[in-house]
Image 1 (spheres, rainbow, N blue to C red):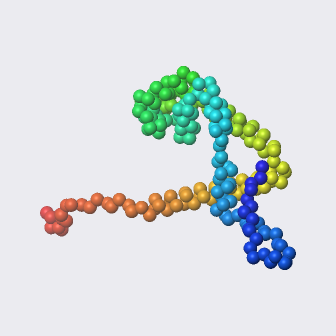
Image 2: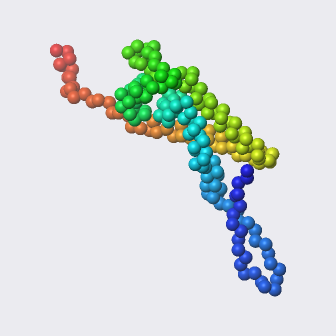
Image 3: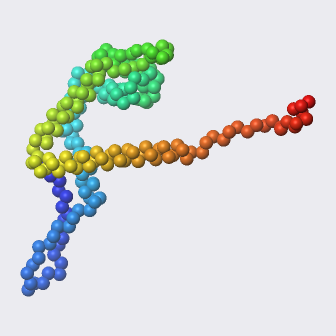
Length: 207
């Protein structure tokens, strides 16, 4: 697989009919064009691929809402039912029903919080956690088949580019963290409450 990053060939202009014709050089693609084509190549997802992925995800009666819950729990850790409902943008009653059905499939379980026994946390089971491991393994297998069709130079070029993307991602993440920290330090502090009591004179204090 190679990306078509060459521009459109320039048309011949002002060629002398009596002189030798010159082969126009390919115009280099602009940076914006390259980025747009790379984004398209990296994010394209055909309907056939989507259908295959959904069939894989939904096997075993695993619904999209179940995948959503497992994703939230993987990202945020164990959550109380009220917090999970807020994250899913559903009522607590609806979240409770979803969790109950997932418990029947042994995807999640409920446990009391160790610090506050009144709070019941929803946590993924080993079966629930294995869902994404299976999906990751399937994705890796498909990528290996795809990458096996590339030549050695193409593989080297792709690896170089992906490593550069990783470095850029880390730098961007660091910039966002620095900007967030700077915003916190520059926010005006809440003004301290001022006393409304009248000052006490020296005579009043001694009297």
